[in-house]
Length: 261
Ligand SMILES: NC(=O)c1ccc[n+]([C@@H]2O[C@H](COP(=O)([O-])OP(=O)(O)OC[C@H]3O[C@@H](n4cnc5c(N)ncnc54)[C@H](OP(=O)(O)O)[C@@H]3O)[C@@H](O)[C@H]2O)c1
Image (tube, rainbow, N blue to C red):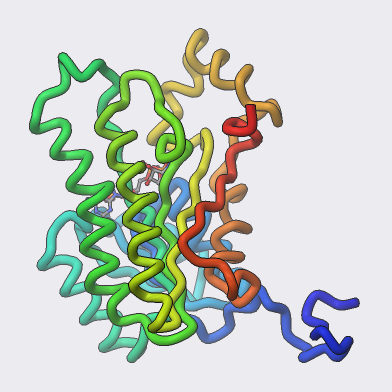
């Protein structure tokens, strides 16, 4: 039976993973996981709007993707930027089908006693308030059949050492997602999270390379390697597409088995 075969054995000739004609906005798409996801969405036929704060990296990513990528700069923690982003996408395409809230930071690894209010706020502003703002304005413009994918983390499911603001932000994203999934089910808009394990990017490279800490993390990963951004692409295509049409309010954990033990 082909992947697109229907229950009565007939094929509609189209893969459930096909994103042809879909307009997908990906935040934090200039590098790392966001770039890997944008590339995956474009490989399946989508138009991708790459957004982040740094135009140069966004343009480099867009050039690698080709025709179906455009660049719009925005800081997701700033309401005016997110509104301007929504207006620019709607002016260009007239619709939004998929929103991937991937932009995120984790600047600190230290105990709460040494964490300042400003450091807490800086992480919450991007990782949680940024997701709120993008859902409110960009997600609010998504029509029936659309999908929102919030990038959480294994730190949204279990604690990580010396990372209280990050864990709080990702735990918040997990429950923001469930609440919003209930609110938007009647609009026909699905809302899920994708929760990566350890992925080798600018955010984590120093830690993953560390003789002691990196080795400890690797030893705890059943599949025996760290992920690459491309390892996250299949999951986001699944959540963006009709292949996951009956899934909302859930978390897709892609962690090499980290949370299985
Ligand atoms: N790497 C991992 O192991 C891992 C594991 C679990 C979850 N995650 C999550 O996955 C997401 C991507 O992480 P990554 O590892 O790919 O990190 P990364 O390589 O540091 O990329 C982060 C991206 O977010 C953008 N960004 C940061 N602050 C922003 C803001 N205020 N407004 C708009 N864009 C902003 C950055 O671009 P600009 O600086 O140009 O704005 C960059 O494109 C994050 O949410 C992270 O928490 C990562």
